Image (cartoon, rainbow, N blue to C red; front, side, top):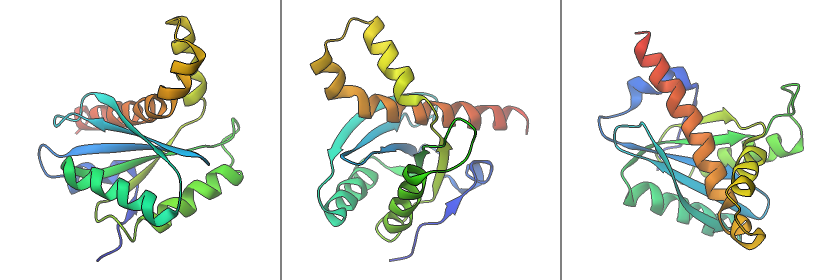
Length: 161
């Protein structure tokens, strides 16, 4: 198995085949939220939440999602501090991606996820979602928020080419 490359988002379009999806990941300490794009790579939709156990099992679940859904690349949320610096969570996410690269054969990009969970939680509160419901969906919705940001960036890149 080859190791998946970590690339810049600007380099992603030329690596993608037509009509492949992107899979967004919101990597947390207890869960990994997942979101899928449509085949036109316009809209991100919450997909699933992985309850983290052992890394190998978590990687297999993600690899299965890649294979089952025709995913051409992963967009992984990078939790930066508000000033743009990286702390322990960002380092942990980078380590997760490095390890995951040995299990999936698609390119990976990092996407700045500052305030994504807070924005999603605010939206769920405004929608009057119960605390129980927010806990159930927040990780995959945060992944969709991250992925949608990357999709919007890819669209802007395509418009300027």
